[in-house]
Amino acid sequence: MNDFTQQIQDIASRLLDNGQVDVFIAWHKGQQDFQVQPYFARSADEAQNIIFNDYSIHNLSNSLLKFRDSKEKIGIVVKGCDSRGIIRLLEDNQIQRERLYIVGICCPGMKDPLQAMRDELGFNHKPESTELAAKCNDCIQPNPVIYDELLGTEQSPRVQDRFARVKEIEAMSADERYQFFEETISRCIRCYACREVCVACDCRTCIFDEMRPQWVGRENNTTDNLMYHIVKASHMAGRCIECGECERVCPVNIPLMLLNQKVIKDVNELFGPYEAGMQYVEGQKPPFSMYEESDPDDFL
Image (cartoon, rainbow, N blue to C red; front, side, top):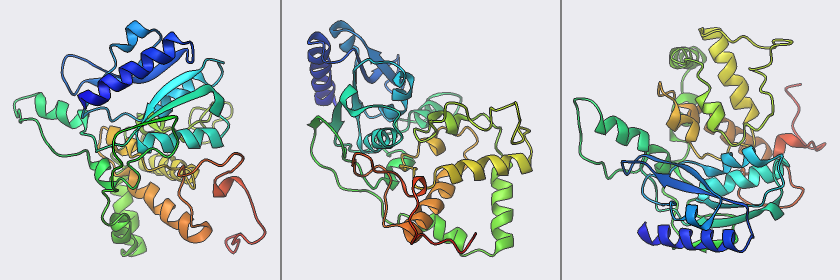
C-alpha cells in the first residue's frame, strides 16, 4: 500500500504542477490508520498528504457531483467499483470525460473503517482485524474499467455466489418475504446516509426532499420507510454499480444490497445481459433510460 501512496502522490504532484488538473481527489489519514477520508488536493504540497492504505474504501466517484457545475479539471483515484461509478456519471451527463484524469488502482480489497472504529472504541477493544470489508467479499470487478493510468497487478473477482442472499428471499412465500422486509425496514431511522453515499443518486432535488408538493411521506414509520426503500431501489434499476457503500454506512445495518441485487438480477434476466458501469460507450444509456419495441410490457 505504501508503494501506491508514493505513486499517487507523484502523479498528483505532476498533474497539479503542470496545470493538467485543478484538483486531485484521493484519500488522507487522521490520527488512526482507519480514520481515512476523501481528500481534495489543490497543490503539489497538498498532494503530499495523500495516502492509500487498507482503509481507503470510500467510493470517490460520488465526490465528482460536487464539481458538476464547474469547469475545473479533476484528477481522481479509483478502484474497480469507483470506476464503475464514473461511468454511471458519464452516462447520466453529470460530468464530461475530458475534464477527468483517472488514476486506476487494481484493488486487493479494503477493510471497513467503521468496523475498525467499533473494534477500537468502548470496553470491548479488539485487535486489528485482517478481514476484508463485507462488501469487498461480494466484489465482481476489483480492477478499474476506465482510467488514464493504471497502478498495481490485476486482481480476480472475490464473489463466490453473487445472488445467494437473493435466492434465499426468493424461496420464501409472499407472506414470509413481506414479514422479513417489514421487520428489517422498520429499523430505518431515515438518516438518508445510503442516499448521500450513492453515486447513482445524482438527482439535484430528491423526491424525498420535495415539499411543494410533498409527493411521499417522510415519517419514520413502517409504511413510509418501505416506500422510501422501494422507490430508491426502483431508481437504482439498471444503475446500481454494486459498490456496497449504502449498506456499509447504514447505522442500523439494513441489508440494502439485498434489495439492489434483487433488482440487478431481474434487470439482467429481463433486459440483459447487462452490468451497470462495466464499459463506457459514448451515448450509451442504462436499460430503463431507453425503450425498444421488443421490451417486455406484460405488466402494463
